[in-house]
Length: 429
Image 1 (cartoon, rainbow, N blue to C red):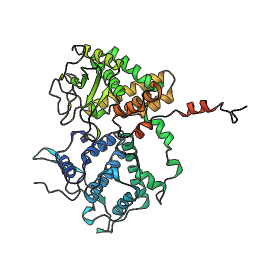
Image 2: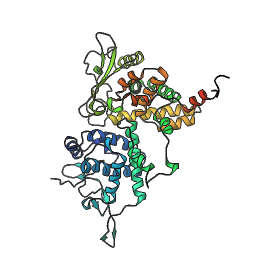
Image 3: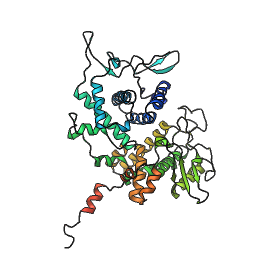
Image 4: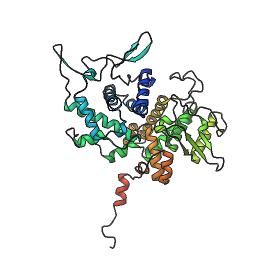
């Protein structure tokens, strides 16, 4: 029987991360039940964030180590949710990192996960510890950490909290607040203004037009492969969906029957049985999305519209697909990894189209955006271009507060300049 240390590694190497780990899952389930109710939920966010670092192995290793230390401290030591961590609470974490418990310090670097030859499974390495001490001439030295290393920890956590804000899990970034008002204050060249963050959240109108052009072009060229991606982005954009709301995962597999028609009003909606924080909601379906659904169903050789409680999977795997836990099932839905790969393929194709038309900067910006940017784009466009009432968008987006929805009510710097260019100083002249 495996004896676990006081803290276990939570994130395997990048190639194994999405496969999951039974021991890590059990650990998170125990934390969720006994101390922090949203621990498992935030872990999913952490995995998604780490997957965005897949192009840099060094970044991935550094980020996962910091997240493991931070989540262990929050969930096991303090027993608090990340959503309630403040600047003052985070200062306690830095103190903890400066003088960690002796049992959490190792004096040699080991792999975080190892293969059990008998079980033929990857398991958390019981020799691993979150803090690494030094030896001089074979003698273990008192653990020390520099201000530079602590500043790096804060920078990583600030980036993670920025991601959580972007995912609407929280509205505050305690790491950023601490860096602005302490000895860990970041230099001006490393700070990002709220305006710049606003710019990279979503696709511009031009950029989104290239995404949809790319989706339509791919669907026309190879419909057997890409009708699915065309409908996927149409659905995510129109209904402000997170990728986790349309992907197969343990305990959930999206089906056509989630499209429901109200028998009294004949209005169509898309039902989401489980979203952020375990909530459910029904999103109003536009006429164009209904047209897109009918096109997709015709391609699948189904009736034009779903029947009540229809169990047909929403995004069926291609026959050639052979990865994932459901790869052997003909009607298995695609998981988060597969859908994410499809969207990044589409984003790259859209960037190439923009580049070919001479929009090199837009192409570069398109490549920096993520699947979650589709949700932000849909919300922003509906508020600022379509003119939907904030309360309607709030309900469809699943926002707890109208204040969250109001953050999307903005104009670009160019539009603000144009509207201000000719305003007079004296309106009576």
